Length: 140
Length: 148
Image (tube, rainbow over all chains, first blue to last red; front, side, top):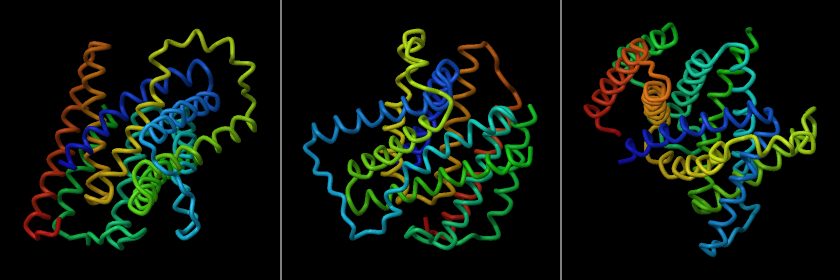
């Protein structure tokens, strides 16, 4: 179920990148990033109001937990820089490398309050197969 | 070149860290609140970057009409991505989530290329199948040890 939802997120991201790409080509990187966030902000505000959901900003949790959106903007900017210099497929492959390394570290140590998923040596074979798949995709 | 490579890898790391931070906030404050704050901070920073850049809304105002309406819908999909990610992130390993999302992206990309451009990239299909194979093997290893 959650794996299916993850695959669905991938489907949505691909369509989103396509749409956002058209927007940034026509309007520029920063203007399109602004519009994308503006539309998202309006939509989530409407949902919050319609559901009568109370928003309370409280200081009883670490302030960095509110920083997810900031990292999101950096993700878009970094991707744009890399996209212009290295092209689409290499940007995607290197991004996946960054995600993999970062996820394995977070999983192994259970950083950021996530549950610990220790790395096992048997999984090295699977990783090598995955990496070779990524290399083939990047080359062709 | 080196900077572009480092930046591309950093973008991937940013995605994972943002996803985890948002999901912790969702656990503490609720799904909608977490998604809302993601957009409060993201929107604020995008305004600051726009003001610092050489682009301006006034300048591009005339161009808004030239963009097809559907191209503006990406922002809506973004909300769905952030909200669904908030649900899934705390449930499965960060590593598998990244990979399964990637597989979803890859095959959607292949399908779009095929129907929109009439291109079927054999290298991408073969590579994608290898990624899936490696993923299934590792899931099998985990199943055996039974901690996922």
